[in-house]
Amino acid sequence: MINMAVISLKDIAKYLIKFTIVVAIIVGIFIYTSKLKNNVGQIEILQKNTFLSCLNVTIPGVTSINNTKKEKAFINIESPLKLALGIELEMMSSLSNKQEENKNIANSNNTKEETKNEQEEPVQQAEIGLKTEVQSSNVPNKYTVQYNGVKIKNETNYKLTKEILTPNINIKTENILIFHTHASESYTSSEKYKYKPTGNFRTTDKNYSVIRVGRELDKQLKSYGYKVTHNETLHDYPSYSGSYDNSLKTVSNILEKNKDTDIVIDIHRDAIADSKYAPTVKIGDDYAAQLMFVIGSDGGVTKHENWQENLKFAVKIQEKANELYPGLFKPIILRNSSYNQELAKAAVIIEVGATGNTLDQSITSMKYLAKVIDEAIK
Figure (cartoon, rainbow, N blue to C red):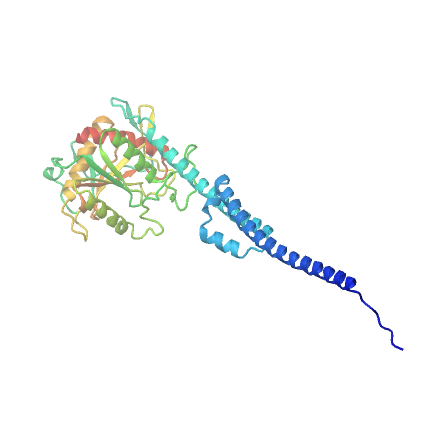
């Protein structure tokens, strides 16, 4: 026996309607989901651009993220968390660089400010007519020749005649060059100038070596109206050997660009490494390190046609020093070595004090040396 179910048209219609509704709902959900996904993508792009723009405007440092970095960052971003993390890292890096930059600028400004303050300090020029008294030292001042009160220790085979020693020279005096062949030479530490030596009475810190002495002479001479070039190159570092070869190149280059410079001063410190040797002169209430000219000649290998003019210049300066501040200078030493003095008509070495002197005393000497130079050549 076969059972048959009878389906009416009404039931068929009902099923078709339900089926159509279900299909419509599925299609609608699919379309809605697709649109929503597109909209979300556009919103993310908009949010990314807007977020970064806001950061660029409101947070300094994010502006340093270039477009290439932005594009690369967003290509790889898979979520808002990565976006935020990437931007935060870029921002932190930028701010760190900015802080370092500001720190460097601050340090530079501090250095400039210190230099500015030092330069703006009113220069106290030396007075004349002061009582002068040479302090006793452990090393006697030997000499072989004397001209008009100027004592000279002649270590050459030349006979120093009156003609050679008479300071009748004609030099250009507007420009003055100061440099240091042995720039790391230093002094005994004092309460005001304490330093850590980098050798036997030597330091590479320019604030505590003969370079600091040169700065003082530079400042003093400028107060009298001279145009001064002060070269602070460490010609004796890292190797002491070859110092004069190094300074020869430096001075030659400077003079090539400044052909009107006749006065060239190489500032040293006496090489005697004895802390007890401190040649000093008291001028008024000041204690100043004694000075000494060292003049070369053509008795060595180097051709040196200017040596007699160099010697005349030293005699001229020391004559005036003996007049204003007797004892400021020790006897001039004349040697066979040229010391690069063949480069100019008034090229000299001036040794300022010795290892037993302090930087204070050596700086004080420059006040009186500048006065002497000005009075002698003006």
